[in-house]
Image 1 (cartoon, rainbow, N blue to C red):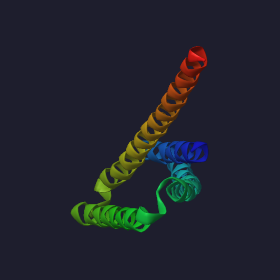
Image 2: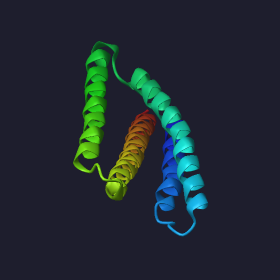
Image 3: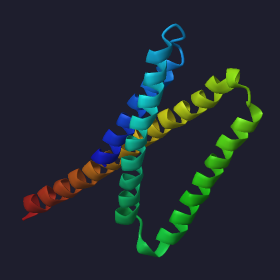
Amino acid sequence: ESTGMWSIIFQFTSLSIAYTSLFLEEHYLTSLAMLIGGVCLSRVGLWVFDISITQLMQERIPESIRGVTGGVQKSLNAFFGLLAFVLGILFPSPEDFYIYVSAGYSSVAIALILYTFSIFLTYKRENTTTTNQQYRYQQEELRV
C-alpha cells in the first residue's frame, strides 16, 4: 500500500512539473526540459504504481473472482485509452493541446484521491476490527 502511495505521489509531482511547463511561454528551453523530464519521470511512478496495484489485487481479491476482476480492470483501461484517442480526435489543433494534457493530469489527480481514500478506509476498517476484537477479549477477561 505504501509503495503504491509513494509511486502515485511521485507520478503526480512529476506530472505537475510537466504541466507547469505549459505555462512558461517566455523560457522555451526551460519549458521543454520540464515537459520532457516531468513526463519521463512520471512514467517511473506509473510503472511502480501499476506493479503495486497488481500485487494488491493478487493479495486481496479471492482467487475465485480474480479473473473477473482482472477482466473488468482491463476493460476499464481499454475504455480510458479509447477516451484519450477520442480527445485527440476532438481537439486535433496544437493550440488545444492544453485540453488533452489537462484531462490526463486531472485523471492522475483523481486516481491519487481515490487511492488515498481507499487506503484510509482500509486502514480504518482494519483498526476498527482490531479494536472490536480487543474490546471483546477484555470483556471476556472481566467475566472470568
